[in-house]
Length: 202
Image 1 (cartoon, rainbow, N blue to C red):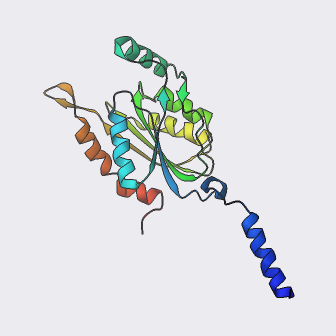
Image 2: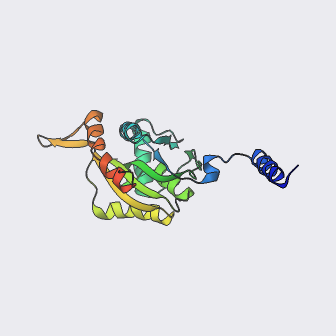
Image 3: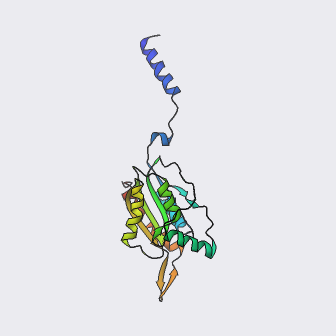
């Protein structure tokens, strides 16, 4: 066998014996991931709409504590007020193949949900662009938004955007639900800005 043929055989053998890389191993980090927690369903509906528009992956961060009924609502409000954590599933999903992540959360007593805060504290977002998306009964003040951003920055994330949709509006002096359809419509208006923040525009 000539030296040329021997070299070709060795190269082919090496290629055949090398296991293929998974996307996580390659670390391409080109996908978009949407992580969200939702209690009433508002945040879920909005994040599902974003998923379709952005062709993203979607993971729900579930609070395994029963928060149904008036007592559940009370526990949620108190826990949020004091910055408590809660048990969540999943706790540490593989984030390695995503360079861009949207974190969706309702706002309770001026803070991200307990499930969302717990998730942020238990994971690293180093080297990733993060957008925070919140649903809330009233537009948040800048100081509260900065506190939420700081949680992500502490976990290593680069916060490149913060968007919020309100669930209630004032009609004849009373706060009434706006409805999921209108909230989703508002959410979709953010898509061009989200794509730009994630450097996805042509």
